[in-house]
Length: 64
Image 1 (cartoon, one colour):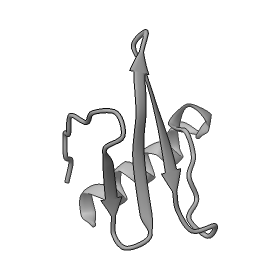
Image 2 (cartoon, rainbow, N blue to C red):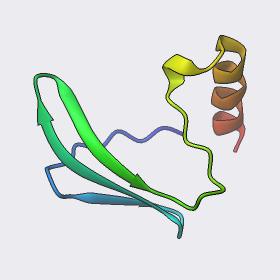
Image 3 (cartoon, helix red, strand yellow):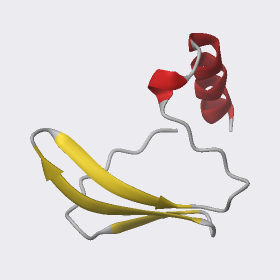
């Protein structure tokens, strides 16, 4: 499942009970946001993952 949202500076999205994403600002085509999550949640930028790991995560997200 995918969800597209437009957010303004300072707005927040909650994922489950434990993850909070706060949108800070947008400038020069970049968006800055903060992710508050439990330490046991792995947060990784896609560009540092191996392509097979990205594929596995995408499949898991669609199956979930």
